[in-house]
Image (cartoon, rainbow, N blue to C red; front, side, top):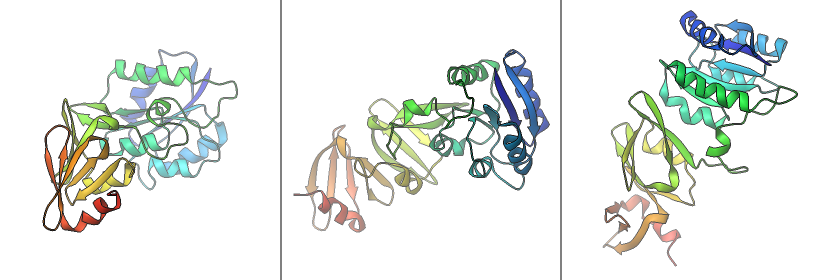
Length: 245
């Protein structure tokens, strides 16, 4: 049996979760909250095993709610905003339900939640992120990007390079191009600098896919293994020199 609290500022969102949870008699809903302050109070009072947590709420975000907790329940985010997916998995969320989601998608989230049951209920949240982040690592090995109504996993070791696409960015692999809602600057802060290097205001390369450097008058061109040539801007040339021996 798992104790559950539902946190969403919209009644329709809470109602849908209650409806889907009715198929799981071992999931006991102890309370609901439509704002962060009430959410913190309920979590501290009932010490749930699992919470369904919205992100954008009046007065306090879902992430801010988590910072006020002494003990962390398992968390499944339920939100209409896809841009927080990376941040959600950084706080070890079990899953990220992007509204509107289907019953089948909810069931997949519940599979992760029930697989993580423990004898004492409360624990550091784990689950899906254990396959996304290696223990003790600061940087993700997988990120989630939007494709239609789905969030698709992209393995970062398959990303050849990243290029700016206006306020967004495109992750380029050998098989496909993925549009991320994050800009190049935001992604640079999330990526392992030992593998990914920003070489231009609009470009990040994966050093594992570099074939050769071509010296120019005041900078370099980088030939990637897929045949693409990426220019190193003058302002980033010093970064190339740091790995040149």
